[in-house]
Image (cartoon, rainbow, N blue to C red; front, side, top):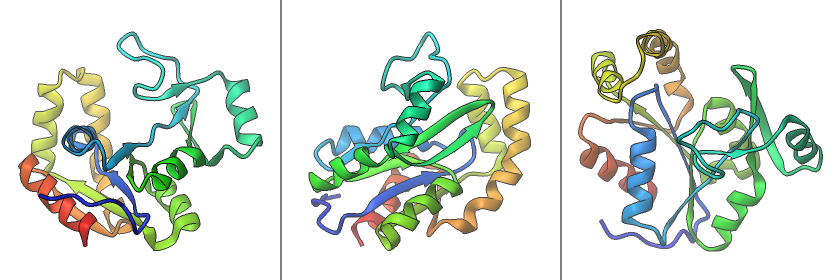
Length: 188
């Protein structure tokens, strides 16, 4: 599909249950269309894991730095999950938009609402779906521990209830088909 510059200043938000393919789709868009998409990376107080680095998948800061950044107005929203803080940077979205790129981010309904509060209908929320059995298979294939799988599958039904908060729903059973559908939505 032929991409075009983001002259309309759209922001793309992807969400869905764990294992649905959010990161895979974001990475494919960044790889196929590096001049058109900019991945917005959140800041977190979560400790960095051994397979991670600064900026991959988060900007890692301590609690005091996070609070300082928040108080300075660098974030437009913040959440707490599993005892750690996360936030999205205003600057990251603005820099991508200034370059006529599509900022793309995975975030929950609260982050989506915060973005829509600032950018209005320029924010396109896309909720990815897949049957629970497919999610279970994907979680097994990526080596999730039995404990993590149990938690993620228990959260599946609750997560799926959030789908109505998004502008579009795209089923991700075939990655190329899902990617094509997402691109059609973006280029409308």
